[in-house]
Length: 214
Image (cartoon, rainbow, N blue to C red):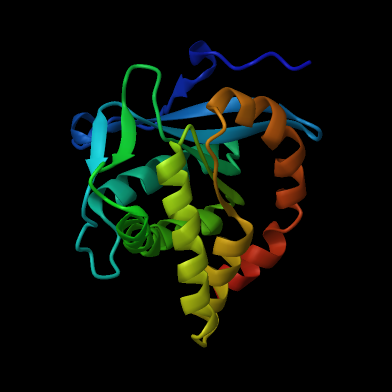
C-alpha cells in the first residue's frame, strides 16, 4: 500500500516570489507522486481563506489576474519538475475552502459554475501547451462538485454546436482532462492518480497538436 501524502510532502513553488504572492487566497505547491510508471509531479493549488462564491467574475473571455499568476507557477513547475497534472483542492488543511453561497439553488449554482468554467477553459488550454494533461479538483463539497459537473455537461453541449479548432480543443479538454471529485486529496493522490495519470499522458501528443492549431 502506498503511504498517504502528508503536508510535508508538498513543496512550495520555487518560482521567485512576486508582488501578487501575498494577495492571492491560495498557495501553489509541487508534489512528487508515485505512479505505475514511476515518479510524477503535480502542481497543487490550495485555498488559504474561505472563498464564498455567489456571482461569476466579469472577465469577458480574458484570463483573470489569479489565472495569470497560477499559469506563471504552472510554467515553472512544468519546466523545472516536468509537472503533468494540476490539482485544485476545494478545502485546505488550515480552513481555506471554496464554497457556493448557501442561498443558491441547484440551477443557479450550476449557472455560476458554468460561467466560471468557461473562463477556466482558457487557463486549461494554456496548461495543455505547457505539457499538463489532467486537471483534477478534489476535496470539493457535494454541492460544488454537482454544480461543476452540471456545468461541464452544459458547456460541452454549447461547444458541440460551435465549429473551429478552438471549440474542438476546448470540448476535448473538457470531456477528457477535467474532473471534479468529492474524494479527499490524500485518496486522489494515492488511489486515483497512480493509474490514471500515466494513461492520460499517452494522449498528450494529440492534445498538443490540437492546441498548436489555436
